[in-house]
Image (cartoon, rainbow, N blue to C red):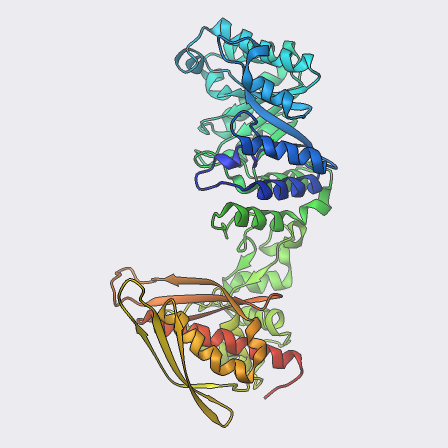
Length: 523
C-alpha cells in the first residue's frame, strides 16, 4: 500500500494542508502500518521539503517516506536536473518517478520522440539507483496508452524495469477506464512484465474503487490510494474503502496493523475531513456516519433479529457504529432500538406507550418535521411519554431585533419562568438567533451553571419544499456538545428565527433532562 494523500490529495481543489496537518496524517498512516507514504513533491514548493525534514526528525515506525518527482527534463542530463536532485537532498530512500507511457503525451505534451522518452525514463531511474534509492515507477496514462499502442506502453515499462525500478505502477490517470478493461490489461501486462505491478486509479468515471479491486484480483501487488479519495478533479481510490475490501472481502493483508488498524479507519477519515476543510461524506461506504444507518421499519426489525440481514459487515470492524433512524417510516422496532440506545429504556412491542409515540412521530412527519438526525428531539419525546420529563424552564415571551448599518448588531429579549421566578433578560449578538441565545443563557446559567459547558457546534437550515421563496418552510438542525458527547435537535417553521430558537431551547432542555436521568432524578 502506498498512500498519496499528502501529495495527490493536496491537489484536490479546496484542500491546502498545513505543515502540522501533514505530519498528523503521516503519523496516523504510520500507525496503521501503511507501507509507503508519498509525503510530497520536494521540487514543487518549500512546504513539501519541510514535510520530509520533519518526518526525518520524528522518524516513522512502520512506513517508509517516499518522495515524488517527474522524470528528467528532455534536454537536461539527470545529474543536472533540479527536480531529481531535490529528491536526493530530502533524505528519503524511496523515489516515486512518474513518466509518460502514452504516445499522445510523449509527442504532444512532452514534445519529444518516442525513443527519447524511453531514454528519459531510463536515465531518471538509473540516476536514483546509482544513489541507492528504491524506485517506484508510475506509468502515467498507461491504460490509455496501452489501448492506443500496447507495444510502446510496454516498452516504457521495460525501460523502467531494466533501469532498476522495483515496482511498475499502471495509472489510469484520466480515470476513464472500466473494470473489465483494467482486468484485461493488467492480466496481459502481468504475463509480459516480471517486476511487481501496481495500480493508481482516478474516479472520473466513478470506477476508482472497482478498478483498483479488479486490478488486485488480476494480479497487481502494489496499490495506491488517498484517504477519503481526495485528489485531482474527482479524486482517487479511497483508502477507507480499498483497505476494508482487501482485508475483509478478499482476505488480503493490506497493512501491518491488520484488523486492529481497521478499527481506526472511521476516526482517520473524520480527521482528514477536518484537516482538509472538506465537508464529510455522510454516505461514504464503511466510514460514513450513515454507512450503517437504518430507516425503513422492515430493515430495522430484521437487523434487531440478525444484523447480517441488512449489514454486510459489523460496523465496529471499521470503527463505525449502527444508527437507527426514527421517522414517519418507523415501526415499533425502530422505537425500541432507539429507546435502548438513547436512554437505556428496554421495552417490548406490547407497550402502550410505543403506539402513542409512533403516532406522534408520524404526525410530526405530516408537518414536515424530520427526526433523522435529531437525537435530542427524539429523546425529549420519549422522556415525556415515559413520565421522566420534568420541566426546567418555560419561555413566556421572546423577541429579536436586527439593527442596520455598517456595524449593525442583533438584540434579543426573553421572558422566562424558572421555578417560581419570572425573569426578563436581554442579549446582544452577531445575529438574531445568537442574540436570543445570549439572553436565554443569561437567565438559565444563573440556575443551571453547568449549561456553560454546552456549546453549539453545527447549525444547518434545509428548505424541504420544492417551491422556495422567503416564506418557505425551513427545517433547522442544531448540534450541541458538552465536550464529551453530542446531540442534535430540530424544529420546523416558516419563520427561520422561530425554528432556530425552538431547536436551541430543545438542545439546552435535553442536556438538563439527561443530566437528571443520569443522576437518578425523574419527574
